[in-house]
Image (cartoon, rainbow, N blue to C red; front, side):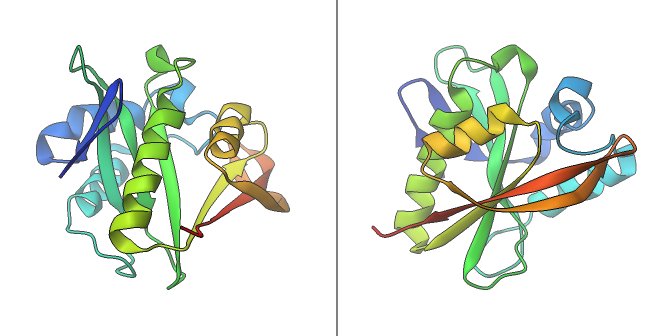
Length: 173
């Protein structure tokens, strides 16, 4: 399965994408507002989990690789994380720093959301962002998400507690 936008191509994650996935989870600029640096074993387990087939309500992640259509350069990943709620999917994304500021996160997330809503009739999509991750909050707002709750001091990164900002997209198409 392949999705395309004006500038990007999105495709399912494959075993050959390990170098990208590993880099995304090790780059301090990428993870500084998301999570503490995981071990290689933790990254490998997360990667392997994302290689499994996905179905709505399966509590399995769905991971797509984002690439520039013209150059073929890998930009990052986007998709659904494993969700504990039967009627809601949680979205996430990570991009390499050299692609920040180009609108790729918004463009790829919008394409992914449009496809997933149409293909699987998903009605509720959530996202959780640590306070201070302004770039991700802007991406979510541009894609139609609304801030619905702030959970104070909910998540620790680098020994510091951050508020979690919970966003929700209600799909009415």
